[in-house]
Image 1 (tube, rainbow, N blue to C red):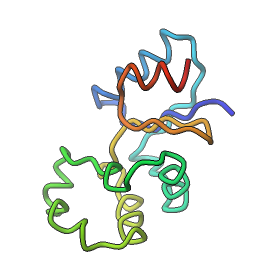
Image 2 (cartoon, one colour):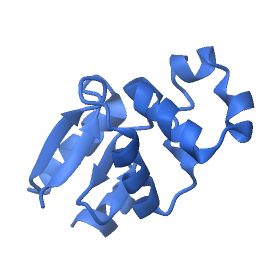
Image 3 (cartoon, one colour):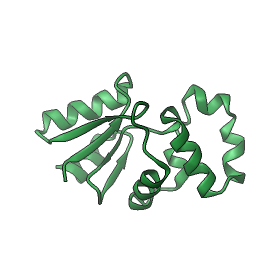
Length: 118
């Protein structure tokens, strides 16, 4: 399976990740996180494969996150409610998410990308 780069085209971190994949000759499918927001089921699968805490999937620096005051609310929400919330708006999701169906990287750190995708 080709890599999926779930990203927001205007996001600078996403641009860095995309450039890294191109520079390293790695084929990928770009998915616009707002136009094709992952479903709750897709997010659950990605999250479970990532091994990361679910709260890491929230774009904590985004305006939407701040508007909804999620910093104070996430702790009292169930995983199911958090996944439904993430699936409701692509701008709430930390990006980029890169996955090959088995491994997952969240955000862009060159060392993580080199370890996972080279």
